[in-house]
Length: 196
Image (cartoon, rainbow, N blue to C red; front, side):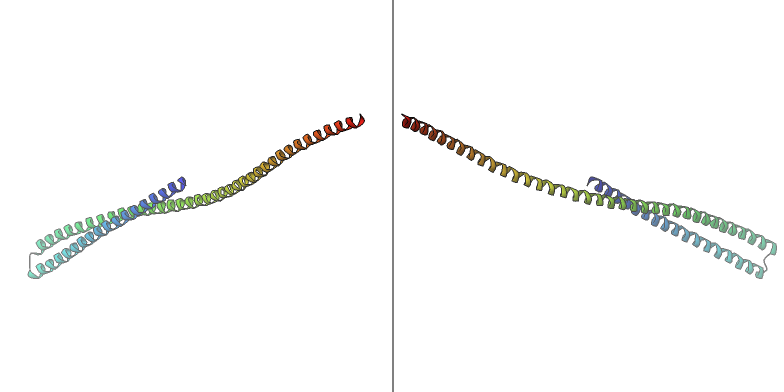
């Protein structure tokens, strides 16, 4: 019974760890989703800025601004925007890889927890079967013991009856012996008198 309780406690502990792991997975997924959305928005902003720069460049060219100056400014702005975009994409890629690693680790933990839960459930079922078997054997033993006690009580009662009968017969035997001796003595006396 104690082992079954211990197995139930272990199973509850594994289930608790499994639940905590699932909560960790959910938290990591939400965090990564939030970060991915943020990076997506940043990328979208950078794309808009890049488009805006291109539009400004077109306007400068149409307005007749100094071509080399406009081109140089635009080139610098494009380089800055491209650098920001590349940095954001690199960061997004790193975070995706980190997320995949964390996801893989969490999935492994979930698989381990599920395996442990299955093992605990199997052990508990086995212990319950053993308990049922031992309970059945104990009940059989109790039945046999009870029957044996009943047979012993019956035997003892029969022995007591026999002892009483033997005592009664011994008493009757003594009485008959006494009567026989008395009768025999009287017969001897009577024979003696007749002979005289």
